[in-house]
Amino acid sequence: MSILNRKAKFQYHFLEHYVAGIQLFGNEVKSIRQNQVSIIESFCQIKNGELYSFNMYIAKYQFDTDINCDYSNRRERKLLLKKNELTRINKKLKNKGLTVIPIELFINDKGYVKMKIVLAKGKKIYDKRECLRKKDSLREIDKNKKYLKII
Image (tube, rainbow, N blue to C red; front, side):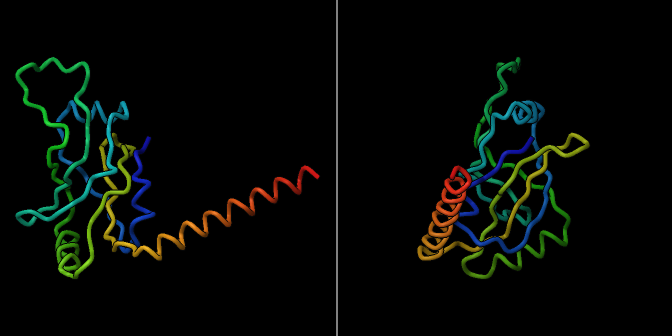
């Protein structure tokens, strides 16, 4: 089970991949197991020397019994990385045009929720157009192959 950020591949060039743990509440983990999560609008920033994920949507668990809890769907969540990885990311982010975005949220073999994050650079408009042209040409080729198989 994994939740993907499909827009990211279209909008960014990926430079470096990292896998990070996330600091979550118990009810958030239950919601993630039920696929009640979205990382499409999510992004990551360094705050006080630590990496946080912002704007990631996790729905409130439907069987939650804590009535007094002030739950926020889009709160900032701390990402757990090794210190050398954090310093490497921090140095790279000082370059103009680089950002950290999540591309996948998954549960590993041990049952922990992990997030695959990427150090990325935004694509220009002409790069996006080229990507769309390649998709269209591949679609046409597949269509022609199916047509030739029928004949």
